[in-house]
Image (cartoon, rainbow, N blue to C red; front, side, top):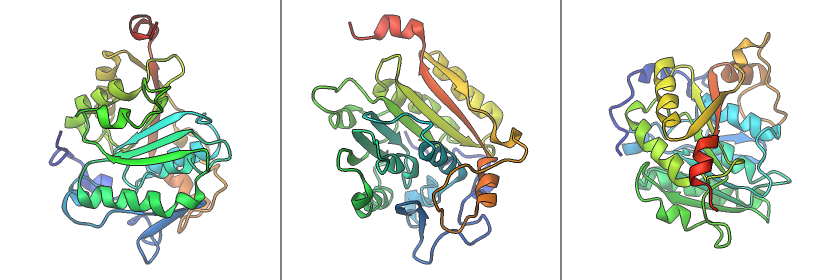
Length: 274
């Protein structure tokens, strides 16, 4: 499914880009550092520009903070991030002392977008734990899931335990394709989870529309605490982030909403492996 020409609030979204937030975040070589990771964004051309893959936005930082603090249980899990961009949350998981067994990062199968993602994986491999396999593959939402499922271990290949969707809901015409991806890849288990984060520039009715549609497919959602309700909003991560101090990181955290999805009991009753 094409994602072009769908975003109505592009100006609001772009104002959240780390490149525009104070103008000091990206290094001279176009990278951002988060703890042990050095990540690049795709060049500003072609589909990378159209699909907003040439920026890093606040929801990725919020999810990275959750990962850093151990609030997303990943040890030994199989993780998939779709529409990954520079893949900050999922690649950070691979650096943890108790990492997933598999991290698959994917994005639109465009040479520029996927080339940048592959470079991020390759240049950060020395930071990944030896017991964590990291794979990179192109995937267009809603299309054939076979190539991504083929990356799963042969003895444990029914699906991924964790999925990450960071700042994708503003592609409102692609909600059906996103939900198809979740239902294709998230293993039917009481313990599997999908983590979704969105910037507040994504209209509330757009977010609620995605949640309602996915509920019809057997998912139930719990919204994470609104960071902006804290007084003051506090950044609780300890890793260094290039160009942003804790106050600026807290501001970005306050710009986000996030949800945790799981399979409903009724869905599990029907679809769980016997």
